[in-house]
Length: 122
Image (cartoon, rainbow, N blue to C red; front, side, top):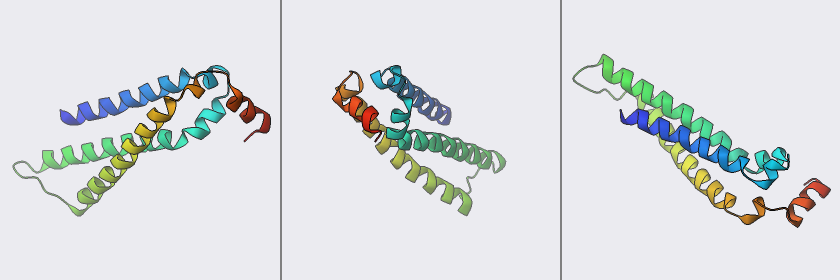
């Protein structure tokens, strides 16, 4: 039950991130490439975290289902659990950083920063 809630919350946070990106002036001006370059780390890590979470939860539930009465921690499950926790740290750090960066007003107005990006292509 709790695994489903965690996975649904992760999907919802990815949806909120996408909505935040779509609501910027840069996206509405059609300059999606700049947003993807700026936020590619958080996009990739969010997808990887969701995949690792679903995999960890599925294997954990299968392990509990087939060994009724006791829970066996195999080496593979411990390794997957560690990968899941490391990925979680990266996910939460990058997601919070992206939320703070998206709070900057320069993403919501036409300004010189954006014009310089277009003019010089950097």
